Length: 118
Image 1 (cartoon, rainbow, N blue to C red):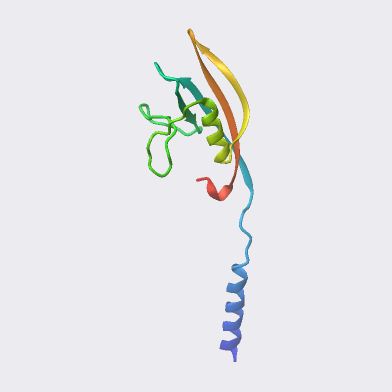
Image 2 (image 1 turned 30 degrees about the horizontal axis):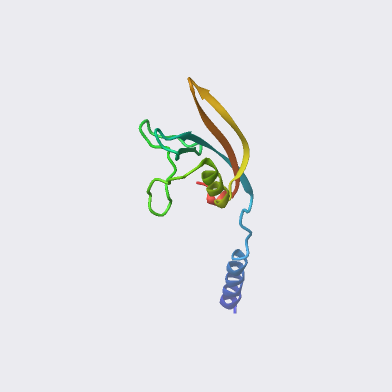
């Protein structure tokens, strides 16, 4: 009889663990998109800074997640629309002058659950 009672307690205790709540806390993450014109072309180059540490020669160009190939954009608006389709919301945008040329920087934010982040 005691064995049956012990087994019943263990089984009921294990079933309650399945109903434990997961952490659904959302965390805001930011990224910076830098757009600059390609030389002798009407297309633009896009670099994205997600805030992670990179190696010295690591490329920061945007790549397709499935193929790993470099993402190509016809215009800055094309890149901004892509970021919006990925769930990012633009926070701020401004030009930065470097010598005689300008680069344009766009800041985005997105909500992630804590479980999505490493």
